[in-house]
View: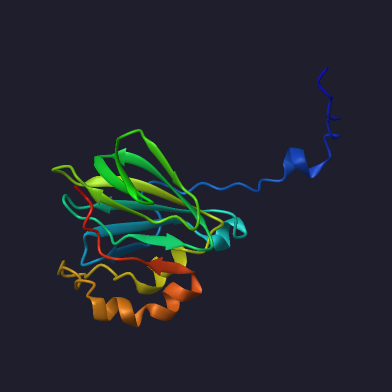
Length: 179
């Protein structure tokens, strides 16, 4: 027999407190990462969720793959909104496409590459939140004249070392195993 939980009175805040929020399609700061190969729309931040959840929308150019890395503070999940991607998961790879969901727990080597011929879109969730701040702090703002942002060189990544360490993001070797 299932245990019944008592229903609170109508004057209880559970009935009236509007604690949720909506973020509209075009809302959120836009940042360019890795020379514009990733266009990151920061949809939900730690500040908005008391540190519980962050959400990014990332458009990824065809053929681009980020460097394999691991997170020490947060789990990361991907919903593939469009396109075809190859994921690294530890020492294995697998492909995922539109409508698929990928979960990567903290402390797991991972990365992704757009293996399609068109722009692909990932919805990226972090729990707890916090990693989104890296994109806000280090992503390039769109150029009003439309110029492409600079590439992320090894020197630029090295200059981000403290921020990566603060978020316990461990950069691993370049991806040679996308095939």
